Image 1: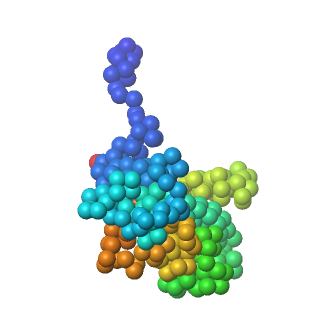
Image 2: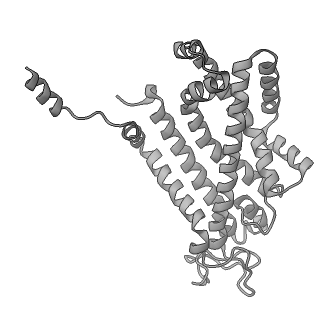
Image 3: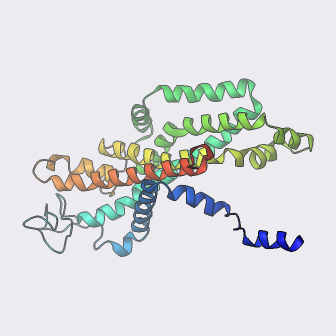
Length: 301
């Protein structure tokens, strides 16, 4: 009898690990896989831009202004995607622009998540006046359109790359605070939290070690989608001249620099716009896949 049980156990496939189960659920969404591949490609281009870019992104080539890309008549093989109005290589600027845009998106996401987690956990744990003050401030921020609020903040502290990150972080902070607070309040009512309190676990350890890990699934999805939102917001500020300042090769600022050429040389404006579109779409597709993979209710049976 014992040998039969042993044989039966040996014939059973071992249960998949957590990562394998996650990847199996994630890979069911083909759009998410494509989005992940595009995001990885953009990240690699951003990291290795100094090695991949044929020229310095701010170097100007006299006599080579407004050259079309390789598929158009009159192109120069030295500049695959052409040059802008002052003779800078478009391919090099787009590659370095990926660095700037991803840096802004990741910086905003990380800072917003860290501050949002701290404020959300504090609001959930202390409650009372602290909870009311935090939530009312977040409601006030959310009551103002995001771009308008970002413009207002930039108008006060001045336009620069650092100030763009600060402004966009403030704009998107409420979504993290409210998400963490709601998740933490739901977890605090569960039995395992009560057991931890009875066992003498301190408040800080209880919230950070016991409660926070169970709030990470929606937070990870929000963080992934927050990167794309931050890139769009920063591009909007850059287009208005309130974000990264020239000659920084930020995609939004590149759009602003070339808007006068929209009709006569459309590729100069279309290329950075296309980069923004593809990157944001890829991150959103990846975020949808993360949501489906991390939420058991959305997994296919």
